[in-house]
Length: 210
Image (cartoon, one colour):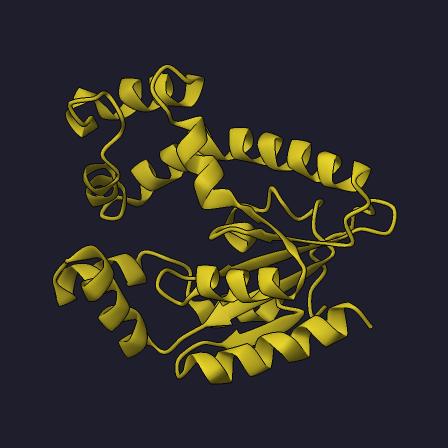
């Protein structure tokens, strides 16, 4: 690796981080690795679990951000919460402080279960591996998925139904992907066709299993 992310051996199991900024295509790439045989831990899915109604993180979020961010069924409205935190770095950090330790705990538990099953490769898909640092002791290598800014904007507008201005606001709120690449063991450019991305994934998979 270009910079030390940290190593934690789970016997012969390889634990690899997969990150990138929003709309770069982390999930698309993760599914490709899954098709090749990797087990995937989706940190975003875990993040949804830890903020379900009644969970400790849910209570902490309401205390900090108010009941206005709730849906009628008491679940957190991710768009409303996103509108708040993407415009305010301090509030974004506060949300991360509430959720990330709980997410890390669940990931560690899942890794232990996979280790018991003698799984060979686990890929942890998460947005803030570099920024938060909580997973540096878990992973041995890091895959960074990149995409050019125009591709990100287009995907965000289509996916979330937001304006170009809002898409840019969200992109600019994140650490530049060029900074994340400095920590990468492998880089996959997902700016163009799925076929081109798949070829890169297959090459990385060969190196992981070499």
